[in-house]
Amino acid sequence: MNADGSAPNNPNKPRKSATFVARSAYYLFLIYGILILAYAAYTAADAHAYQAVEKARFESVRVANNYEPRHVAQGDVIGELEVPRLGIQTIVEQGDSPEILRRAVGHLVGTSMPGNQGNVALAGHRDTFFRPLRNIRQGDTVTLKTPEGTFQYQVESTSVVPPSDIQVLQPSGGKTLTLISCFPFYYVGPAPNRFVVRARATN
Image (tube, rainbow, N blue to C red; front, top):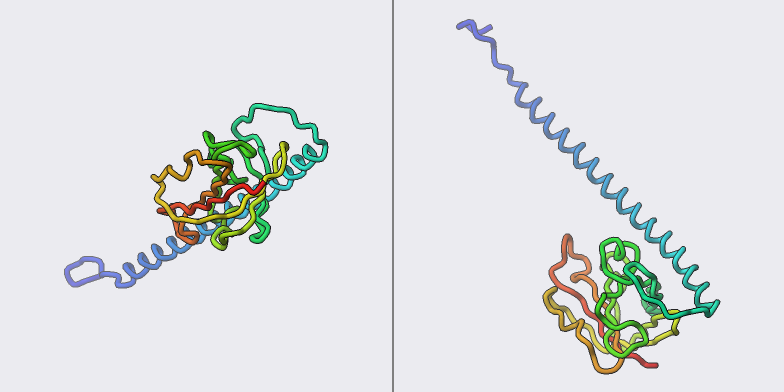
């Protein structure tokens, strides 16, 4: 006790408080990191399983050759996209909702369907199915398989545009294919631009 009767100051108290706060923050960040990794692993496994099931189902339809004209609804599988040189092979679904783009590449509603005249526009995440697009080159072959047939395209150009640029979705003369992903590919957080690949049909 001090001479005036008051309790003595404890010099270790501020240090203990700071240690407690630092330790709590460490564990909070550790738990947050583990949850992020667990979610990433889950989404990757879910997408892989979905792709395997839908590819087998899609191939059975193509082999059976029993295609009948149908209305394509949101979430329906419309085909399979391949870029052989880059190792891209992924199912394409109708629509571009977050759930669709988490498990597949999405066909943008309002653009042409594969095999028709005009611009077929497909969107994919830069950190999953479209990550290899960063290495695409002019002249690369892109194949889009559907129950109606197999359509091949040759890459003519690439560009980087702001998200507000909707010209890349406009109808085109002949048969074209547009692939869209976020850019830069290694950007942390919502990417500021879009990477656009334009290809033209060769068959």
